[in-house]
Image 1 (cartoon, rainbow, N blue to C red):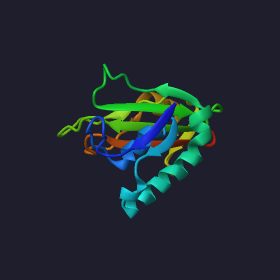
Image 2 (image 1 turned 30 degrees about the vertical axis):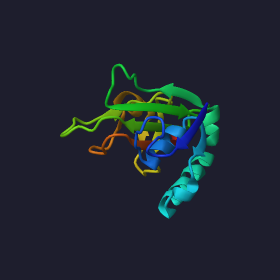
Image 3 (image 1 turned 90 degrees about the vertical axis):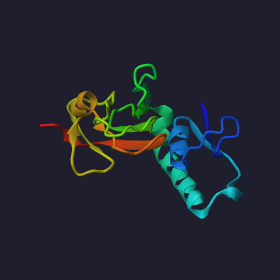
Image 4 (image 1 turned 180 degrees about the vertical axis):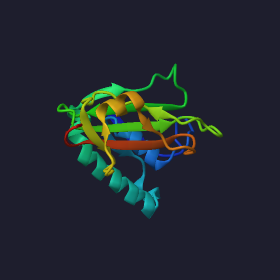
Length: 164
């Protein structure tokens, strides 16, 4: 699937979105850029370079892993989430776009899929680990108060050995 980061505001819809969110969404396919880089600030160019590096890092996972749609737009209007899991179930990339900000929201979490229930995993390189079953049935807490249309990614990686 072709997925490109376009200009903001978008020429067709007029929608404005952060470069981070556009990059998170475009990483669901063949990340590309469809905008005039001459109009980008140096910070935006640096962010785009980092997105490209992240995409290269996760390329095998995105293109050869199992894809899971984690939310249904008809049932969940707070956020959209999707996930890629490696064939050996040792790595996963979870992408989330917060759709609507709420004041004083309840804790929001996304339940992942496709992990080994008894394997321990770290999230984003944390020293703390969780069993796959905890991530799949309990879920990952989403940051509170991050606003409309904010993109978030979590990289989940197996720690050494099964849970004891």
